[in-house]
Image (cartoon, rainbow, N blue to C red; front, side, top):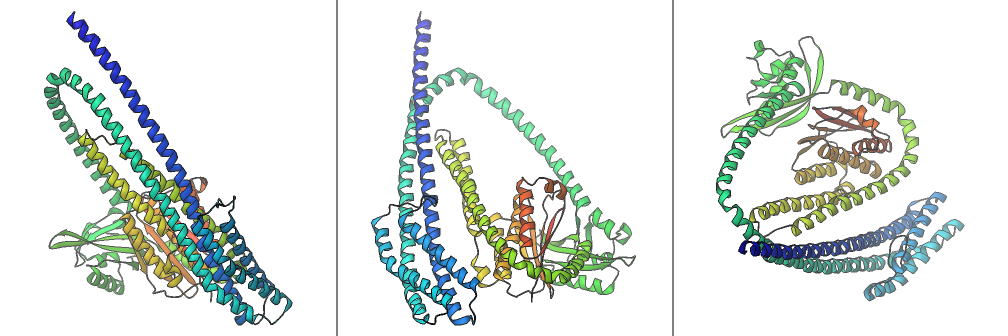
Length: 601
């Protein structure tokens, strides 16, 4: 009878626990749904605010461009073409349209009509200045069309109001930014309240559901737990040790096979003596065990001058490393070109060696000479095509900005959502799992920070406009190396220091950036080398990586894939600057991408 009563009491207890459990789940579900709705709404608002701030900033650039065009037409140009007038008129119309959309709202651009009192006041203050510049510019254009000389006063009016307009627009942009920050702050407070409520529900669930249930279960398994735990631990440890040992052996065998048969590599001492040389490299230079007492330079080439040059490089660069192209001559008097990288490796405190990694670039050298010849023959035709290409570059830049915006939304947004869900899933009672989740959250936070810095850096760097392509590429490799932890190096092999047309420099920068990003994202590369060299008529940029490589023919057939679109992007963009791209990739050995751009005098 007592046993029956106990069973009935247990059934009632578990029934109540089940009800409380479902109630807690529904409460958490509703909280999560409301939080997600609120987050999505605020993300939409932030995107709109970001777009408004961007357009507001663009207004300052357009006003400066109008002043620049007016000054050029009035003081620099001896003759005024209809094309120049039309260009100034188009810029002015865009400036007016954008200003009207910012002030009065625009549904297609998602600009709100309602604004704060501060913004309404600032727009009221800037209107007279805006109208003065607009009217003066309209009159200036009209006088140019009629060939009237009364433009000096109009130019002075434009210059007088330009500074005030820029100051007021700075105030408007700052106000937009302040209001956006206030919205984010309010959202953060609401999220904290929702998070606190969720933790409270989880705490109540722990005390009223899991803790009572846990006590009943502990009574049933207490006698079996100790012996079962010991047996499982012994079996698990034995299995893990065996699996680790087996995997280590497999990895060592695979790594050794890959190094010996796929890479041109060897290890040498700082004095030039050979420690070990890979099979593929040995076949290329006809190395045998009878040559083991020779120095690396003597095995690599039979030419004495080339041997002295290699010995000099090893002696001078054995501590800092070296990368460059060298010419070698074998016993059959055949000439080869190698792209050689020398990396110092510390074995012990007082012991070091050099790791030599090479690429056979003989065919590329031949192709490069042929490219130079073809570029010289077609230079006249390419100059005529430059006008058409310039318009395409502007369109491609817009697509690039849209791509960066998509990366921020799809990449960082998804990681932030994952961070939130992981925070909500923390169970404070289970300290071990909580510690694991906290470690995961730390890693996720670092990934988010890297994503934000990467997306920010993908925008136009100031070095490109201030110092040119060489400085900007050096800065690009340094920043990406810091962000990704990869070894990314840049070499200006011929000390190129010329400034090119701004559109050409922008396209060269984007092409190199795309090649490096592909090597990091798809190839899994740990070392990336960017080389810049030039001749009188040709600028060449080479991007080498030690990634997994790919089948070029297979990627060309898959235009809808990300990697296929990346290659198509590079091939299309290189045409905008009358250049050519060469892609050489072998699965398992790495990838080399070469950009050749003609230098116009």
